[in-house]
Length: 121
Length: 181
Image (cartoon, rainbow over all chains, first blue to last red):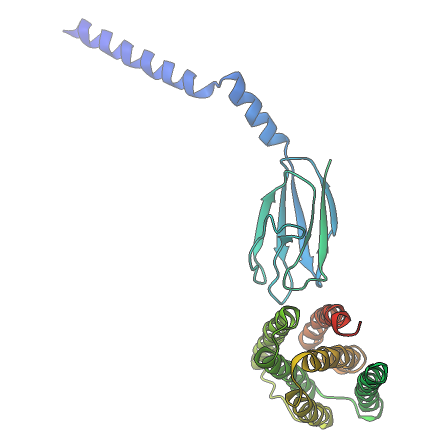
């Protein structure tokens, strides 16, 4: 009886070990994906004094850009030529992010003279 | 047709010059404004532009004019909300003064002029007035209100409103091109 208990206990330890080793390793594909994610950068654009600062930003494909509205009025961030993407209204203090996949001219559709540019290298 | 255009250009120019001269005269001859007086000027000036925008929203059918008017109504209300919150916090009661009265007198005439026009004549009159009004407001904020403000938070609010008014001016000038070809 004691022997059977000992065997079951050892098998339980073995199963736990296999589970832990399995969860700590990953396939080569998963590894590449993680490294790529880690390699992507995050950039900040301040919407301040009725300007996008910086107004022009050079990034790599897959990088993230975060816009934050520091002004006293609502703004938005909208792709200018074909309206491919937009943040929607950003109240003072709000932020919005975009994973950039191609270069774009953008503007604030509320204050149409406010313009910015994303350049993907 | 050319004579008509020339008269229209001259009238617009005369209104703009009148507004600017009036504002600069106020700035030069008045004694230093107190913070309660500055609060009154700031709130009144913003309220007037909201009233102009309300007239435009009622009378215009032009998409660019309507969009501009919508932005004016929202932005100037945001400035009023900030100003009211600040004076409430500071315990300041806005006080009428010569500048406030001058703004209100000008607004009464302008609203009558706008209400008497229709169609493209209205669009042109509204947007030309917005150009002139924002030029006058920028001059007043930059050269009088910011300089006269004693409280640092009031000064800071006026400073943050200045780029907003300059952007409104650039936007108005852009829309005005449509009606001044």
